[in-house]
Length: 577
Image (tube, rainbow, N blue to C red; front, side):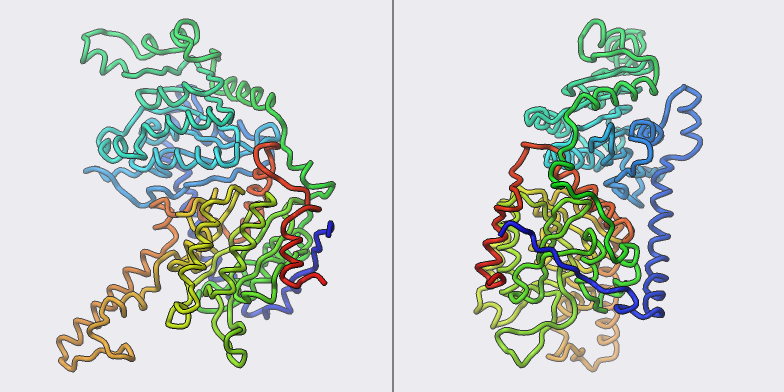
């Protein structure tokens, strides 16, 4: 079969959800997303207006102002790592490092998707805090996986020295950034650096491996700054004298071009990106342009219940993410708890894997129903086969998680779920195709791993404001913790009032602590997820990521749809007769 049999999916909103329920869901989610907007705005302010004014007095732009001038007008920026270090305070003064003092974002420059890494020079002169190196490396890894040109806007005074022990040593310490520079270079990924100010120690090393280095008149790159030279060698000399553009453009050759100011440097960077090959996305659209879903994506905010215990129709989610609400579902009769298939996003094919919610049939006991959002044998085998086929065909994979974990118990063990799960883990660990993971709501236990959670290296993992990432729910964990104090019905055994009160208080405290740890901002702070987004932003994000996956022709296998392995899978599963 040469045709990809896309079929209509989904229903109008008023046939799926009544007005009152839709409004209630939107209101609850709206409150959480307002908090998200407020917290984003706080991170974007850096250390505030006072520090921004200082930059302007020196004739310099902030990192975000540079970004705004660098990207194509009217295009959207997709920032990652916004909430790294969120809420953490350092030292006796309780200093904060919004976004870990660096902005990392996917951006369109001259029509090409690029990764931009910009030191936030309003935050301790762009210095590196705990987790700043890891955030930069994560962005470099994304660029490497997608072969995206990488732009460094360098304005970095080196390590934030009071916290150096938490950012200098270790396998992902600051020096690992330079290894990533080298790996990008070794894979032929273009790197362009603009040097705009203080670039001391690691900040000086960061741009050097880049293919192009532009320096402004206020910029310098040094292993050690003037203060350290004065202390070590008793020489009175400025940092510009040591490593300014006069030195590095005209003498050392460590930079290529000397420019007067920030604006000219940004124009030069755009000119260099313009020389690179253009995107291959239009070629892979096969004459199809982007088309909005028939059922609007903005409706997701009223269709997915904020309470993780309530159910919804996963097919309605897909209908609001795929172009024209068209979808090719594969193996629908197998592993009913999972939906797998192909749809277009912005005119480009992508594979989707999503957890069904509610109750589904039990093939072992046809007279019974069992809860979905759990992985059973059929579902595991189904997503393993689909994942392998997409990898063989070069189709980027989107994992939409809302999962409670694996099936457990004697029957599950007898069916060999450990083995089937290991097969899935092997598949996801060895796939070459770009994979993107979204935590819609629940991301629990080994199910989070199996559905290509962050430990299995998706290029990007997104969370929503209602995501819950944990081994198990708070009450369940409290029961497990106090198991020896409970009977078979999970009731407290002791009749002693004092002891009973202590157990009740302990279980409550445990459950509350776990619930707090499941907050998506905790995951963002710890880099356990890449970005927290609004539900209405999900389709634009997926459109951008899928387009990036198709940008670079020849970088990976992309098969013509006529010869997809997925057609064979459909025949073998009895779907085509």
